[in-house]
Structures are given as C-alpha cells and as structure tokens.
Amino acid sequence: MTITICIILMSIKKKHDKIYIKQFNNIFKNIKNVKLYFVKWNTKKLINYIIKKKIKGIILSGSSYRIFNKNIANIDLKIFNLNIPILGLCYGFQFMIKNLGDINYLNFHLDKKIHIYNKNLIINNPFKIKKNKYFFNHYDYIQKLPNNWISVIKNKDQIWMAYDKINKHIGIQFHPEKYKKSGRIFYRKWIKYII
Image (tube, rainbow, N blue to C red; front, side):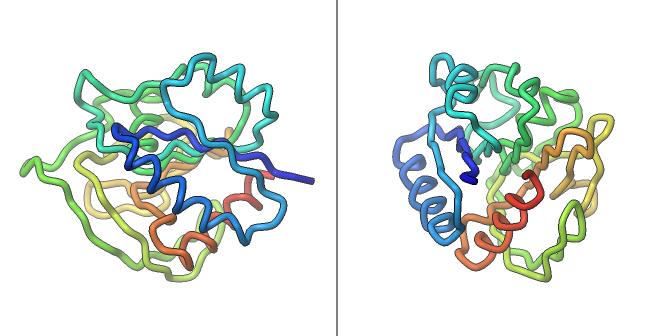
C-alpha cells in the first residue's frame, strides 16, 4: 500500500520552497511505499486536490511569514475537517494552533529576532524516539493549546511539541527534515503513527 503525503509549502520565496523540496525528497527517498506531493499554500482548490490525490497525511511546512502579521500564508480551514492527520512544522504548527485555538495561544520573542539553535530531544508521545538532534528556527512560539491537545515537549513557556489525540494532528516547533538521520527516524515514526 502506498502512503500519499501532501507537503504544503508555506514559504514566502521560491528558493525556500526548493530547499524544502530537496530536504523532504532526501528524507523520504529511503522510506518505502511513500509518495510525496508538493503544493504551494495558495494553490486554488487545494481541498479538491487533496481529496483527488487520496492524501493520507498532510505536512504544513515552516515559513518566514510571521503568524502575527496581516500578510501570512493562509490555507482553506476546511483542511481541518478532512479527517486526515496533519503535521505542522514551526509556522505550520503556529498556523494550526491559531486556527484551531486562538491567536492569543501564541507569543513572540521580545527581541523580535529570529532564534536559531539545535537541541537534542527525546520524544515519548505520541510515538517514541531516542535522543536526536533537531533544528529550531523561529520568531514566534506556542504558549497554550486547544482542547484535546497534549503538550509533549515544553521549555519554560514555549511548547515545542504537542498532539491532538483525537485527530492525530501533531505540531512541532522544530525541523526534523534539516538533518537526514533525525528526519528519517522522525518521519518513519510519524508515517507509522498515521496509518
């Protein structure tokens, strides 16, 4: 059985899209029975496209858009009613929480600078992954979750990973696709979780 994954590119610039496409292709090329579809966030009839391709999992990519700005990557909110598990990466996670919860569930760094760093993390829920290195690259972050969401990894007032136990949605503030080893482990576990 082939698992169809739609990666929605939430980037501002085409060069960022190319980086994401290359990273995801490198990660998924060794994961059997997975077919990737890449679409831009502003694709017309996105919901129809997802239904037509019989998508089994959706990834909302990161972005240099800021969730608090008026000009943001925005997709049809009907995507949350498709009963398809969604993985939100960084901005994708923020987009999910803003629209499934409230903009007040988010905050931003007071220095208004981008925060870039690596962290070694252990993931225990909704699947288990031993300690691996993950890349962080963000301005904004999650502080509160909607009902049915469970915080998995938290640092002070920032929620770095959470999941919706009913819909199998997962949000992460980091980027597993940045590093091949971490990415392959993470996405293999995610695929097993959603099927």
